Length: 444
Image (cartoon, rainbow, N blue to C red; front, side, top):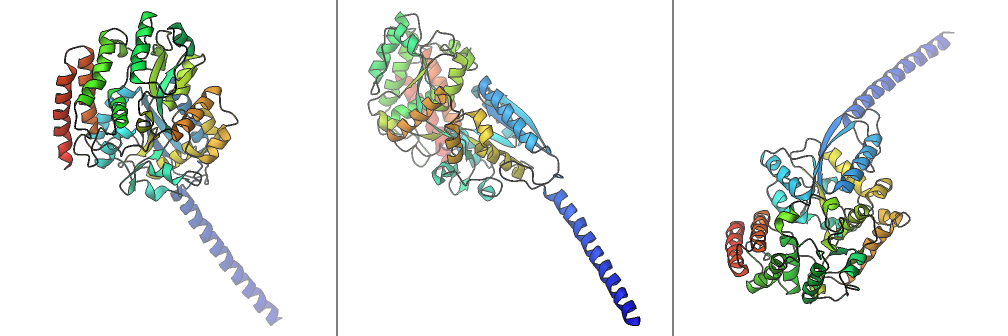
């Protein structure tokens, strides 16, 4: 009897210890769950008690991009109800005008869409976070090639996640091309062909195109001549002969002055794809990156095509580049959550069925394969063109150096003055060299 009583007391004591231990463990786990807020890298919630987080995200684009991006954000919020996302978006030019004062005040959004032209400027001023620590933690790169990842590197740090790759070309309407008396655009066309076609378009009451962004297409032109806009050190221009500047901008300015291409005040009225001369049946084509093709075709709502860049030496000038990046502000208080959103954006198949390569051919092999089943004819055209460009191009130049934004501002201003015939190309070439050199020599 005493033995049985002793045994009963021992069992009761053991039970109390066990309850105490289990109770303490549950209490600790609850606290840990509340504090951790961890999630899977595909954006799905792993805990029901994640801390509320607010993210600001900013991007540029036309209305189609705004529309689907907001839908993708809603998808992410449904899977992550603890996240509130504030959206800031505009067309390309207005976007950078808004971002500059935010950067100066150290108030950049948590997630920033950024291009290669402004990348080093923001990263070089310690305004972007190094995302290397988040790879394969918050950001799933299992199906992303190392080359695609490295496209966002400056030195040994990763300041942005590549959202897609693309290539330059002419997006055009074949019907309007024929209206100008031009049957087709040959694969190996030249600058002389381009000027001739622009003249035929003018005679038919059309613009051939809406002009070329100075900083993008002058860089392409220099590459066809074996030169670059910036030198390897980033402290000066990459070409010595100003005749290259004179030839390129002299050709473009003459088209504007002759009325074969729109003047700057006409172009200033274009705020998005819906305002483009092509969409309004007033222009044959638009020079732009391949990732912009689908959005333009959707707005135009008629058959279109993509032509390669002009030559000679097109293969030396053409290159594949990251279309843009998503970067995280160095001052963000929610870097991990921002990284998780970026991972969702590049890896989630359903989200990418909305994006459909608008920001470039997807970097995720898994996503790219899945999209083949649902791609529109326009998207397939982009895939085919980028695949062709990959086989007919050269490696891209290094990232633009610190100060490049100021250099581009000077170049754009001088191009506009030439188009208004306020300054001759020869004088503009010298002025640009002087201004660019003064800006870039600070990088020594």
